[in-house]
Image 1 (tube, rainbow, N blue to C red):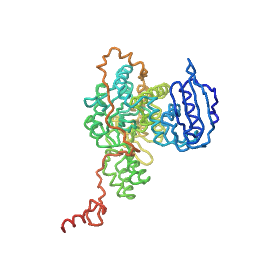
Image 2 (cartoon, one colour; image 1 turned 90 degrees about the vertical axis):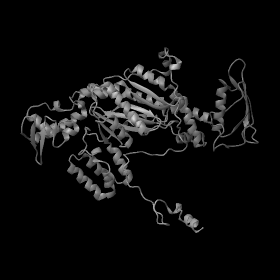
Image 3 (cartoon, one colour; image 1 turned 120 degrees about the vertical axis):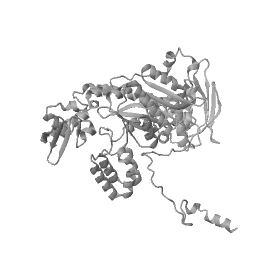
Image 4 (cartoon, helix red, strand yellow; image 1 turned 30 degrees about the horizontal axis):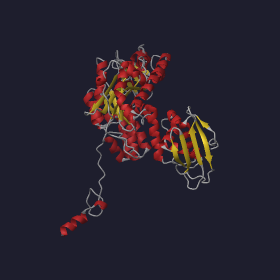
Length: 583
């Protein structure tokens, strides 16, 4: 507050600086201003409290923008009268106050704004005012939501110009070109998935929180080292069965255009019916599993028992059907309701013992990791969401390319570790050879059959993880075979490098776009309007669909008044019906 002492003759660079300073002083010293006259050449104000004699007058000097204080009358007799709110603490003033921090932290919460203003100025402002100031501040820094949709066609054009082979398309609806859907996949991601990644695709969605809401749909894979590899993403106005069918259709076109033969794919998702139907229709030869993390989250939410969750994971990882049934028996002992809940999901969708496709040991998607990329940008315009993903892709591809160049092993690091463990475990095993490809491998407690022709072992580890298990390693070494030659190619260090071999190029600044589009007629540029759906007022509901609708029996409500089902006592109409019959 000591910074806001005014004296006659004090000069300010211009009228804007003077107005800002006098407003800051009023807020800091807790008195309200009543402005009598304010224009570009003069400023006259007094304290708003009746009876307080304080006055101030300032004018502009001739031929220069400088403002100077001409007179200050009286001293404040009102004391601190503006602790709960302040007329000068407008939304624009708050925007100016939070501007720098908002640039550094777009998740600067309204409640933190309130705390900082209270700490610095000692005044309390309404939460809604802080919220509006944050919205306005973000729009000033990143542009408005409406502008984001308008720029989409030009931005997609820039993606395809700077990254040839990429796909970036906007889909609109209605005669007024309302935004409906967006699909983006960078060529480096397409090439890396087809030539280096595991044939696994995780599907997921995250809700956006900007003015016009929307949902980010994503398709991600795993690289040779088991790390997240984003393949494609889309933004839709509404997430429903139709939007998932569209997204899987675009994904199928993308893969079909870039390879002669679509590989045998395995999809992982939260199991909702719309995704399952879309996968079955667009990728009829693919396998589809339920993400175990989503399944266990759903069970934990329903039954609130961590031991149940632990046993479900054990059941999922059980290699034999016998092991699976044992774990399900333990679950039933703890909770028959939980066992019934789980059994309504076919084990072929989640349990290793029954699942027919290859998961390479991945029972869960990596969608949550991808969602973290955009978590901070979910409140921003749609262009900013894409830019956040694009910037993260550039960084990750560069970092992993450097990591791949330093790898000296045949397999990617995580696969190499697993292989070395298998080689170490094979030293105590005894091998009996049946023919050219079949072996019996004996250990202290069991025997396993290994077939090096079909790359299989009765323990099923080889089939599940794509790497020879200790039994297979023992069999291969006994006939002097190279164990690394019997590993899946997608787990090698060379595949890891191939995944990140293509470069993701930056997008020019918005100011440069017009130069690259000089040959286009303005009539050819589609002006995209925001969707009609807007964020409703109030706190959004926290709702997450974790697994497919299980068709469980609904809880039947019972009326204690008439002994009928389907309603409660409070909504019972028995008395009304009886009254009508009596009349």
